[in-house]
Image (tube, rainbow over all chains, first blue to last red; front, side, top):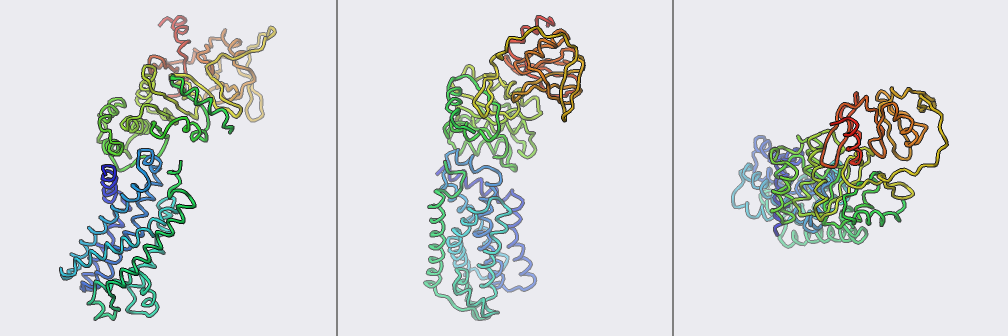
Length: 237
Length: 295
């Protein structure tokens, strides 16, 4: 537990001090400010910036944290210091979730949405994070350093983010969002359903969709682990 | 690289005396196998969090290994107390090596394997690290280093070995020489460079180095390939004021400006025009030099 807390503390500190990671973390709140000034529609701000934050944290920032360790050459050092892969991955995931929740709350406050939406919004954040973290980990396994993460994560981010945001405008994105966990954003934003024609989503549907994606991610990670006997080559001894 | 002579390396490391290998970096994984994962491994680059301060970095790894008691000792041994708040990105190469060593000490390691431990210009850090290596004569722990530079290998206190394709060769052993017939007295030394042969007067030569089975002659900071063995050159050049200061080095004493003392058992010589380049001086040769020059 002590090692986990030490790693977590260091990773949270990285969010504040690593220039690239810090800048990327601040993009969704910054956009939220812009959107609020331009559109002044709380639900639309939550849809665009809040959803952006969820996808960014799980699919982009989470693998970036891991790739940063690879680029610095600190992975072998950490594994020699008694940190095993599970602890390493767990700490990075926990740090990403904490960062996501904090940023999500900031975006929520900027949006000016009704406080009654906050619990559902945060729970949805956690649900999406949990669903997409395995996806982020797959990216981290294959990325050798930070630039690789930018290249690999961007299309994945687009897949999970763009269809739900534009679902109300095009039928293609509407159909695509039926199969994406982020497409369940209508669960927490019923106002969007009424005003923008988003489909309403039941809790069971959303949970089932997230579970399927989560299971798919875990299955892919299992295949990778079976092939390589580890996730990160430097930990293999 | 034949793995067969790595058990031999393992035996040398187990002997208890500090051992220093000269060899390519590709031998690092093989030498690492002579140590356990809990032993200290000091890499020659990377493995640092640039945005952290020295204190944060050491505390982080001490926290991971659960042995914060060793932290103060590590800081003291590597003389980091004055620069604890310094950011790692602003540290010199020498300070970074000291930090890496301190990290391993703070993790509670007793045996150490270092890669290129003194391959930097910072003298103060070199002195601290060499002084720390010296303490392994009294301690129970094992110490092994691998340097790419022949010079750096020879300066470190302990046994010196060279890793070759055919095996491990001890650099400290005296050279086996053939019985020579009487050589004619020649006052020119032939060397080659770019397929050209040059002849230098002994007074022009700064120093001679033996490395990788070849002999290199340094004249006016330029390196030339020598045509003779070290023993032959020693015999030729002694009467011109040259001194065999090490198994692998002969220096022109007219060009020596400074005798540098790193530790009780580690000395080097500095020559005019070579800045901070150190020519190793064997422990056994120090008394001889003292007798010759009365210091």
